[in-house]
Length: 234
Length: 293
Image 1: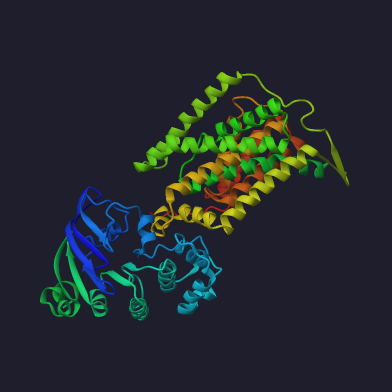
Image 2: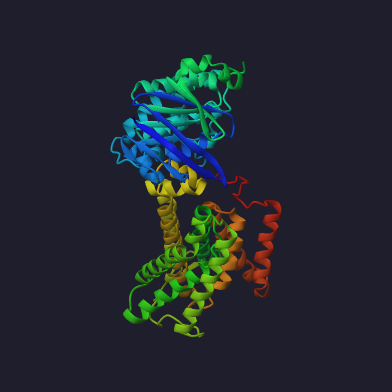
């Protein structure tokens, strides 16, 4: 188990946004976390990333209790979040965004590693010296992914990677996510696009108003009446 | 005549730019309009003066000491007055009021120690050397002022654009939340910024003290007003804007004294700022881009 949440409660804006959720991500797995807007999906990721404090419960990463650790400590440990809306630093150049991705690492191989990212995402190489604000939505998502990879993540937390992208780009991004996973990075994927998320993941959790309502293999969830009705437009 | 005024304006404007650069840096990164920056500037001037009168050091050493003392003072202000409010997520107004309190305390303490009189550097501190180029006479004083101010500004711009920590400062300025998600120690970036920006204020203080040869507890007041005007003119939080805005204000002041009347110096230069703001309400380089998270 690379990540385990046990009975985690989080208050956010005076609302109990997470009401005792338990979930886990195995080594090398893609796990989907689906649910409606406001169900607490992003809150769960932000609690794991250390941006939000838990009121009770325990978060374990690679066997270590990381509950209450600072965001820097968590990044340094290898948990990287690609937040909703990508959070590109628009005033920094594309290249500088990638450099900041490797901020916590002592890096003597920055040039080679950045070259790997550019090989994976050729559009970024062409625009490396431009302010990242000039990128299109799809390019920004690629930059966000590339920046996360610069940190050499062991666990990637992806928040709504499909948001605002055309169906073709969504396919491309999800393909890249599966490739990253094949190279050994475990992934916790938060999505409103439940169909796509369940297609590429092995297991899934359904979050409803701060509680885990359902958990199963993704294949079963794709055929679950309730999931089809509520999240797959059936 | 014009070229001579040009040099005078450059000397005055580059000090304004230096002051405004620190001011805008704190605003851009910490999102606080620090009304203690004038007091920090004044303490820098007194620190420089003190080491000159006590140890007879060179102008450059005096500037470095002024920078260190002001930098530490700025760091301390952040620690005791701004950081507690930041931790409790009070933005903008509350920290600004807290810095007014800091300014008042610092000015009162300076007044207690140095009294209300005007201090001067020793007579032989700055050799009255001057150099002639074509029609312009450059004094050693002007060369030092412009040289120090411009090199400090270039150094800051270099650090921000070329070093890892400089880029981290820019990342925090854009979004502390995103910076935190990248593992950047945001709190430390705030502290480094408060120190560096205040050190620039201290350098401006020593340079102003040397330029006008007058140091007193209230010398931070007028430059505070100018600093606020300059960063609004340049675009809040914008580095290029602060530098250009400072130079514009310096030129406006010197030229209005030279060609119009010294009686209206402030009225004319602030009137000019007013006109520029009517044309560009967000400042020269300002955008209406709001910081995320």
